[in-house]
Amino acid sequence: AGFDLSGSIWKRAGWNSLDALRAKLEDLKELRDLVRSLGRGGGWGPLRRAPIQYLDMSGRQGLLRTVLEAQETRGLTRSDDISRMLPAEAAHLSRGRTVRSSKLLFYARLAEKALQSYERDGWSEFPTRISHDRREVRPTADRGPILLCVDTSGSMRGARETIAKALALECMRAAREQERDCYVFAFSGPSEVRELELNSDMKSVNNLLDFIETVFNGGSDFNEPVRRCLDRLSDAKWANSDILLVSDGELRQPGSEVMRKLSGAKDKLSLRMHGLIIGSPEKKRADPAVLRGLCTSTLPNGKTELLVTEFSSWASVQADDQLGAIDYDDLEGNARRRLAGLKREADRQAEIRRRRSGMRGSSKPKAGGTTPNEEFKMPTAREGRQKS
Image (cartoon, rainbow, N blue to C red):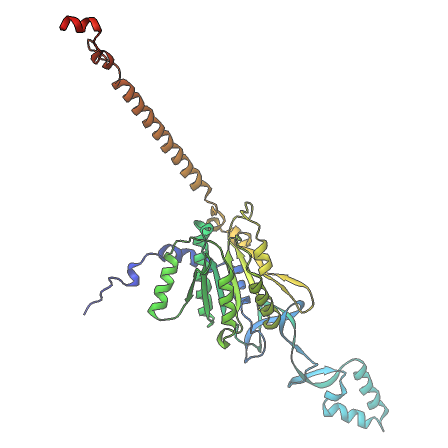
């Protein structure tokens, strides 16, 4: 038996052009770091090799090794802690009652913090920052899922739409590679939200291809996707999620009730919302004040954290010839369409003049003929008496 590929996903070409761009985005260090930072779950978990964490009072809660938590004995070390010294050191102290040299040796080692001791420490929670350059064996919990909100309004058409789709595709691929869940909300106008979850079944693949092949159009209402994201957080499977919003910055301010619930989730659940602006930094079409307000969080130390970045400002994007030369506002295309429109208008005006000149030419009398007024001239009274 053969295979009938008619109507299958192999007949659909929506993903052909995006896959090459997605593969290029896979090499962007900033995007990899962004995906790794999404999701809460960097605390307690099984021991495994993971990126190290260092103390940073402006960071999120993490785990650091400290002697203040005597949870395990890892080996031997030198210190001035009498409670952890070896029995041999205690024997020197005991012998010092009768032998002065033994007593002096013990106190000399104590002053130099050179007493042979058990190394006992543990892990405790501190504000930390993750460094992906080095790794160590440490308690590591799985990072939480990703809630990805993609702006599919009409202002995202063109290069912005292509970049947004490729970014969504790469985020879903990276999340699946890290064994994390990823849920996509493609939103535009009020109540126009499309949900997408990447699974291994054929329905999920077809839904993904439908999203890729869809042309962005509509408004930018962010109320409904925020409500649905917050509803997802009430599920245990998505409780440790973070939100990534991909947009060009042209968003309407969500309602006061939605903002109140979002602020409560940030305070109680440590929810973080990241914003990724797709566009040209030297020609901003809108002030992304709404996006900055959505992606601002208050840290435990009272400082504010703004998690908004521009795709064009990444060093890896600027160093790439293809990505750095993207015309987000399609200036060349707009100029080309404007010239084509002017040419069509000139042709239309020329056709109008030609038709008008043709109408005037048909109304002139021919040589040896009569005009319409002469042809239908009324007879005089004298001509009438002669005929009678």
